Length: 126
Image (cartoon, rainbow, N blue to C red; front, side):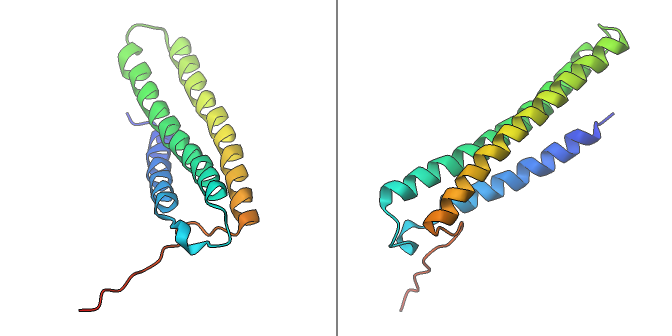
Protein backbone atom coordinates (compact mmCIF):
# COMPACT_ATOMS: atom_id res chain seq x y z
CA UNK A 1 0.00 0.00 0.00
CA UNK A 2 1.40 3.36 -1.05
CA UNK A 3 0.75 6.36 1.16
CA UNK A 4 -0.75 9.22 -0.92
CA UNK A 5 1.50 11.68 0.88
CA UNK A 6 4.51 9.75 -0.44
CA UNK A 7 3.37 10.45 -3.99
CA UNK A 8 3.01 14.13 -3.10
CA UNK A 9 6.48 14.12 -1.55
CA UNK A 10 8.07 12.57 -4.64
CA UNK A 11 6.41 15.13 -6.91
CA UNK A 12 7.51 17.99 -4.64
CA UNK A 13 11.03 16.57 -4.52
CA UNK A 14 11.19 16.67 -8.33
CA UNK A 15 9.88 20.25 -8.40
CA UNK A 16 12.42 21.37 -5.80
CA UNK A 17 15.20 19.67 -7.77
CA UNK A 18 14.20 21.60 -10.91
CA UNK A 19 14.07 24.86 -8.97
CA UNK A 20 17.52 24.13 -7.53
CA UNK A 21 18.83 23.65 -11.08
CA UNK A 22 17.42 27.08 -11.99
CA UNK A 23 19.25 28.66 -9.05
CA UNK A 24 22.50 26.94 -9.99
CA UNK A 25 22.16 28.07 -13.61
CA UNK A 26 21.55 31.73 -12.75
CA UNK A 27 24.44 33.65 -14.29
CA UNK A 28 25.94 36.48 -12.22
CA UNK A 29 27.06 38.23 -15.42
CA UNK A 30 23.39 39.09 -16.06
CA UNK A 31 23.34 41.27 -12.96
CA UNK A 32 26.16 43.76 -13.33
CA UNK A 33 24.66 46.03 -10.67
CA UNK A 34 24.82 43.31 -8.00
CA UNK A 35 28.03 42.91 -6.05
CA UNK A 36 29.54 39.42 -6.46
CA UNK A 37 29.46 38.88 -2.68
CA UNK A 38 25.74 39.75 -2.56
CA UNK A 39 25.02 37.43 -5.47
CA UNK A 40 26.91 34.55 -3.85
CA UNK A 41 25.16 35.21 -0.54
CA UNK A 42 21.76 35.01 -2.24
CA UNK A 43 22.76 31.94 -4.22
CA UNK A 44 23.97 30.06 -1.15
CA UNK A 45 20.75 30.89 0.74
CA UNK A 46 18.55 29.82 -2.17
CA UNK A 47 20.51 26.62 -2.73
CA UNK A 48 20.39 25.80 0.97
CA UNK A 49 16.60 26.15 1.05
CA UNK A 50 16.08 23.99 -2.02
CA UNK A 51 18.59 21.36 -0.94
CA UNK A 52 16.96 21.13 2.47
CA UNK A 53 13.57 20.76 0.78
CA UNK A 54 14.82 17.87 -1.35
CA UNK A 55 16.43 16.21 1.67
CA UNK A 56 13.31 16.68 3.81
CA UNK A 57 11.13 15.12 1.13
CA UNK A 58 13.47 12.17 0.70
CA UNK A 59 13.72 11.70 4.48
CA UNK A 60 9.93 11.72 4.83
CA UNK A 61 9.56 9.16 2.04
CA UNK A 62 12.32 6.92 3.39
CA UNK A 63 11.35 7.12 7.06
CA UNK A 64 7.67 6.61 6.32
CA UNK A 65 8.35 3.48 4.29
CA UNK A 66 10.95 2.08 6.69
CA UNK A 67 8.57 2.67 9.59
CA UNK A 68 5.57 1.13 7.86
CA UNK A 69 7.16 -1.83 6.11
CA UNK A 70 9.74 -2.49 8.81
CA UNK A 71 7.47 -2.33 11.85
CA UNK A 72 3.92 -3.07 10.69
CA UNK A 73 4.10 -6.64 12.02
CA UNK A 74 6.07 -5.73 15.16
CA UNK A 75 3.92 -3.01 16.75
CA UNK A 76 0.22 -2.58 17.35
CA UNK A 77 -1.71 -0.42 14.83
CA UNK A 78 -2.11 2.64 17.13
CA UNK A 79 1.66 2.78 17.63
CA UNK A 80 2.19 2.35 13.89
CA UNK A 81 -0.25 5.21 13.19
CA UNK A 82 1.38 7.42 15.81
CA UNK A 83 4.82 6.87 14.27
CA UNK A 84 3.42 7.73 10.86
CA UNK A 85 1.91 10.94 12.21
CA UNK A 86 5.21 11.88 13.84
CA UNK A 87 7.05 11.43 10.54
CA UNK A 88 4.38 13.40 8.66
CA UNK A 89 4.22 16.26 11.15
CA UNK A 90 8.02 16.41 11.29
CA UNK A 91 8.02 16.80 7.53
CA UNK A 92 5.37 19.54 7.74
CA UNK A 93 7.46 21.38 10.33
CA UNK A 94 10.55 21.05 8.12
CA UNK A 95 8.64 22.35 5.10
CA UNK A 96 7.47 25.39 7.07
CA UNK A 97 11.07 26.16 8.05
CA UNK A 98 12.20 25.65 4.45
CA UNK A 99 9.43 27.94 3.23
CA UNK A 100 10.75 30.63 5.59
CA UNK A 101 14.32 30.12 4.28
CA UNK A 102 13.11 30.24 0.69
CA UNK A 103 11.05 33.38 1.32
CA UNK A 104 14.09 35.08 2.84
CA UNK A 105 16.17 34.21 -0.23
CA UNK A 106 13.38 35.37 -2.57
CA UNK A 107 13.09 38.68 -0.74
CA UNK A 108 16.85 39.18 -1.04
CA UNK A 109 16.71 38.35 -4.77
CA UNK A 110 13.90 40.86 -5.32
CA UNK A 111 15.78 43.53 -3.36
CA UNK A 112 18.93 42.92 -5.42
CA UNK A 113 17.07 42.62 -8.73
CA UNK A 114 18.08 39.00 -9.34
CA UNK A 115 15.85 36.95 -11.62
CA UNK A 116 16.21 33.24 -10.96
CA UNK A 117 17.27 31.27 -14.01
CA UNK A 118 18.51 34.22 -16.09
CA UNK A 119 21.45 33.25 -18.26
CA UNK A 120 23.57 34.83 -20.93
CA UNK A 121 23.14 32.95 -24.18
CA UNK A 122 26.30 33.02 -26.20
CA UNK A 123 25.87 32.33 -29.88
CA UNK A 124 28.74 30.75 -31.70
CA UNK A 125 29.44 32.10 -35.13
CA UNK A 126 30.88 29.65 -37.53
